[in-house]
Length: 273
Image 1 (cartoon, rainbow, N blue to C red):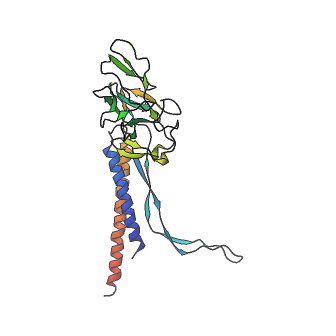
Image 2 (image 1 turned 90 degrees about the horizontal axis):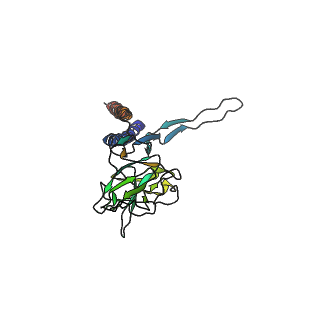
Image 3 (image 1 turned 120 degrees about the vertical axis):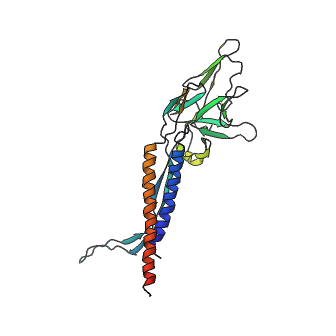
C-alpha cells in the first residue's frame, strides 16, 4: 500500500482536530473571559531509503534519502492574551486588568477550588458574593467567603479588591475583605473544566505567592480589579475565519491524495488484464 495514503489519513485526522478547535473558538466569540485555543502540527516518522556518507579522498559525501510518513497534532495551546473591556454598570461585574484568576470554591467536607477570568458575580440571598452561573463562592485572600450583610446600605469594590460597605447604622465597615487573585507561572497548564472554570494541575507551576488560594491583587505580578466591567472573549474572528479556510483546503488536499492514490492502485490492478 502506498505511504502517501497513510500520510493523508493521518493528516485528515489532524485537520479535523484543528477544525474542532476553530469551531469551539468561533462558538465562544462572545463568551465572557473565554481564552481561544490554537493547534500546531508536526511531522512524524521518516523511512530512510539510504543513509548519508562522509566525503573521502576521491569522492564527496552524500545526503541520506528519507521519505516522510505524514504528520500529526503537535500542541493545542491556550492563548492567554487579554480580552476587550465591556463596561456594564453593574457593581458586582468584575474583570482583571493584567495577569491572574479569580478564586472560586465550595464549602463543607468536599471543598474544591476553581479559577476563572469571567467575573459575572452577584450576591446571593445571604449576602455572599458568588458566581452567578453555578453558585461557587468568590474567595478572599484568607480563603474565606466574601459577605456583605443584606441590610447594608451600599457597597463598593476597589482596584485592590477590597469590598467595603456601609452598614445599616450608617457606619463604614472597619475591616473590609479583599478579593483574592491567583497567578501561575504557566497558566496554560491549568485544566479547563467548562463553565469558564479552570482547575489546578501540576504543570501550571507555583502560584505567585505560593498559595493556591491566591493573594492580594497588584502584588507578586498579579493584576488589579476593575469593577462594573467584564473581560470579553479574546477570539480574533478574522483570524479564526482565515484559519477555517486554510484548514478546509488542507483537508480537501489530503482527501484528494487518497483519491489519487486509489486511482494509481486501480491502474496497477488493471495491468493484469
